[in-house]
Structures are given as structure tokens and as C-alpha cells.
Amino acid sequence: MSQLFSPLQLRKLTIKNRIVMSPMCQYSAIDGFPNDWHYVHYVTRAVGGAGTIIQEATAVLPEGRISYADLGIWKDEHIEAYKKITAAIQKYGAVPGIQLAHAGRKASCDLANKGGAQIKEGANAWQTVAPSAIPFLPSDTPPVALSADEIKEVTKAFKAAAIRSIKAGYKIIEIHAAHGYLIHEFFSPLTNTRTDAYGGSLANRVRILFDIIDEILPLITDDLSLWVRISATDWVEGGWDLAQSVELSKLLREKGVDVIDVSTGGLVPDAKIPVAPGYQVPFAERIKQESGMTTGTVGLLTEATQMEELLETEKCDLVFLGRKLLRDPYFPINAAKELDAADIAPSPYSRRH
Image 1: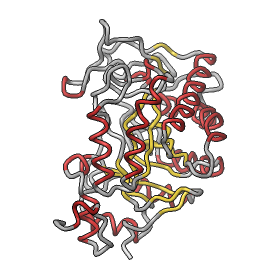
Image 2 (image 1 turned 90 degrees about the vertical axis):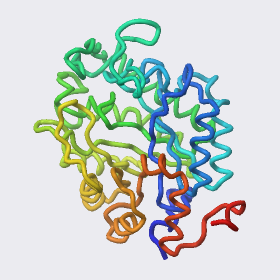
Image 3 (image 1 turned 135 degrees about the horizontal axis):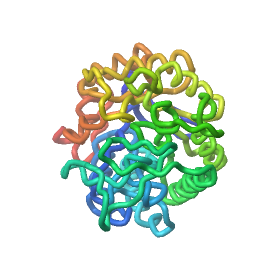
């Protein structure tokens, strides 16, 4: 039996295969609301056979958006707008997930196709926040360091967003603690120079994540699942690294988190990253081996046989695909055929597949 097309049980939630659509910003929302683009984008990948669809980084507060065109779930009015998307994703056999996020100092940016630089003034600009007043780029407006009380407000915003997400029909809640956004900024000594309970030791630097988990975990019933995405390394000496990621993953497993979604980088603009096919796999493999956590890997994974080998050799439990699914929404259908797995094409396509 193909490992890529074997089911995975998380609590009482069954995922039909190991292919996960990785969250990717679409820069197409207005005031955080999804529209027809988002519906077509996500549902097409469900029709194409992915087992799980994780929605793009969805802001828990308006100032937590990367750009003014990001999705959000910071108010109750957003709930109804997502129900059509989650219902259709489930109708076509995939599990709908949402990545809850706060961009921290990397917020208030322009759209990616316009360069993505920080917007400093005007209707689409706002003051950024971070653990410490250190800008991402020297030319950026410095973020405001969050007070302890303001950190608690962010934590409550994640809980409120999770409640709305569950009401909207999402079955997986993924906390975005990667790519240089707010939670990751707390993790790394490069961006966290605090001397209070949220800075210094590893336990203090990851405290915000565990505060958020403490708020969300009681909401996660057996038919739901809680995931965390991390950057396993900053790729910079003195920053967050794999050893700390392993220790964090052990703690998260003990806490009750179901899956670690392992990426890398994003914290600082000058990191030297050796990008190549499967370059992030060793991080997921070591985290899986040393923490016992169910683990996903991501990054330049393009071939079905490559993904099958990763699962067969227990380097990971899930394969997260980004650009591959942008180029080919029906990759899972074709991969099943290539690996001699059962035909997963929907019946309207089966005669021509």
C-alpha cells in the first residue's frame, strides 16, 4: 500500500492521505473577508485529492495581518463567510484547516507582487508590534515592544479566533509560530531581548506559545486537531536552532499538540539558506525521531516517489506542498496513479483520468 495515500488518525479525526496543502497567502481579501477567489482556490485542491487543506495565515487581529489583503478572523462577522469554503472542502473529501497568525514586526506590508515592502503611512499602514523594538529591516519603522498586558491580549485574540474558526467549520487549528512572525520573534534571541517572563531562557521565550495553547487546547474536542508550525532554525548563529526545536517539540507533545509542521527561516533578511529539494527534511526527521511527535515536512518537494520514500523511511508523517499545488492542483490524483494507489479522481473525472 502506498504510504502517501494511507490514512492518518489524529484523535477521532481521519485524514485520508498524507498530502497537505501548505498555507500560502493569496493577497485577495478585503477587511479580512474571503471571496470567490478563496473559494475556488481551496476547493479546487480538495477536488484534486489533497487530504488536508490549511488556509493561509489568517490574522487574529487586524494589525496582525502581513498585508492589508490578508484573510482574518478577528471578528464574528467573518464566521459566516468561511462556512461555504469549509463545507465544500469537506464535501470533496479533504479536511479543512486554518492557520491562525499574527505577523508581528513583519506586518503592515504591501502585496507580494508589489514588492512586499513595509507600508509606513496611509490607509493600508499601521504600527507594528514585537517582543522587542527591533525592526526587520533597518529602513522599517521600529515595532513597539509589547507589554505583558498586551501579550495577554494577543493570547486572548488567538483564543477568540480559534472559537470563530471552529464555528466556521475548520477541523484543524494550526498556530503559526514560524517564518519570523510574532510567536517566532519571541522564540529567537535575535529578536527577543526582553528581561521579563517572556525573555531570556528557553522556557520564557516560548511562553507566549504555551499561553496560547492553554487557551485553545480546551476547545479541541476529539473530532478536531491542534497543530503548530515552527521554523526549526533561523539559519543564523546565535538564533533559534534545531536543538531548541527538538526541546520545544517534546514539550508540545506532552502538552497535547497533535502535529508539528516543520519549516525553517524567515526571521532575518540576511540568513544564508541552502535551498535545494528536500532541504528541510532533516529537521523534520530529527524532530520526529527525538520527540516522538507526528511531524510534517515542507520545501521543494515535487515528485510522488520522493514523497513516498520520505514516508517509507519514517522521515516524516505528512508532506506539505505549496508551490507544487499552485502549479498542479490535481497532483494528488496523478500521484496516486503513479504509485499504483487506488484511483482518487472524483467520479466526474474518472472516465477521462
